[in-house]
Length: 316
Image (cartoon, rainbow, N blue to C red; front, side, top):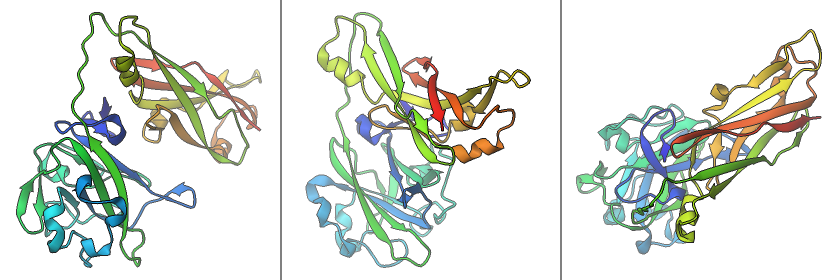
């Protein structure tokens, strides 16, 4: 289970096998020269059935030249859903760096683009929702069956740039139900993959997660399905234990609350956080900026909220 960032609305990320009767959360991360960056405008996101196209088959002639960059009328019959920021075609305001950050179960939200953080955008493909079709007017979501799809993002990276097309893929799968004859027994082990960073560096901390199903009488197939892409609400805490007697025993450099909106979890359940060591200069009561810090993660796993061990991280 996952929730749209900052809400308790249940969504399924693209790599977690969303089904046609669940809200599919399609994210796009934008980087420039190795850093997450905001774009000037997410003009639109189109959903096409993969059976009708190849990834190399999309080019400018599928889209109009105006600022909305919506699908041209000659190809409108091929589109299954449109997320648009154009007020003439939707109920939402024009999108830019001020794209929506608050998601709710409304008609507007169902066909809007959201900004969850710097360089991080997303749409929620909602069963039964409607969009404004270029030729048919208000149309119910046509991406409502099992199969493979393209999500085509049309984006202006800067105010004076031409709109570019970014093409990603997702699959709507048949809902998978499991039955057990005993309560599920599941365990998680974490490991800090980034053990050393240099003071002055800005580096991503990676914490791997190994999921184990302890029940004996569960098939290998079920164990495989349950053992990946299942953690949620991940947070990271970084502390420093002082050796100097006139200082506090430990200093919390970053709390779980501080990192709740900046931590990412990928399809292999690896937790990541960008750690800017320059910010250590602003932390009070440290006996030294260099030395050993300790990293701990918290995350939800089914009905559990788990805490990892504290892992040493050397800043040198």
